[in-house]
Length: 258
Image (cartoon, rainbow, N blue to C red; front, top):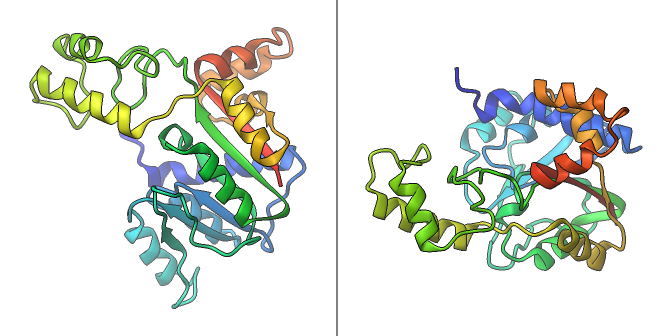
């Protein structure tokens, strides 16, 4: 059975809570949390169910059902705008300065075209001493997670994409399309909607804005509920470079403070 965003959201919320607690940041009912790139809004909804003042922003309005549930269950006041739209041209977050204690995102920054602007906005809306925790897919992930093409995080020229389209590689939205159309769609999507920076470049960009950053992939392995990650984490004590390999070929987990 397919796991939806709605189904996975409680697990996702606890993942962030547990890692932040391990890092010395406790989310309480007094905390104000922003989900940057909130998708359908279910992580925000689950935070609200636990009494946390959580909000979401995204570039499109995906949150109608979560908004309705928040209202029906009295998790938000009648006039409270829990989910808000963000302009992807300048990444302006529609909240006041110094609003949030924590800003989180899960697999969002690979879609951010303007890192400096996005990071500056996150810094603006964070309170002094507030923090960010962000899951960022690796540039060197063997399979690009949206078009399912090997190494399309790096190699994205037309002949390469056409080769894989000819072999029949399709995502869920491309079934039944011809190879030329698939190759064209993938080329346009990868060029306009994905950004896979190297870890050193991500580090530099975050340091330029915040002056600090830690990559805590060992905590990703510790608190992720996937069986592979659960098996990998115990090995970290014996093979200490496992988090580095995970960071290189799967995901980075960036933590920083204002």
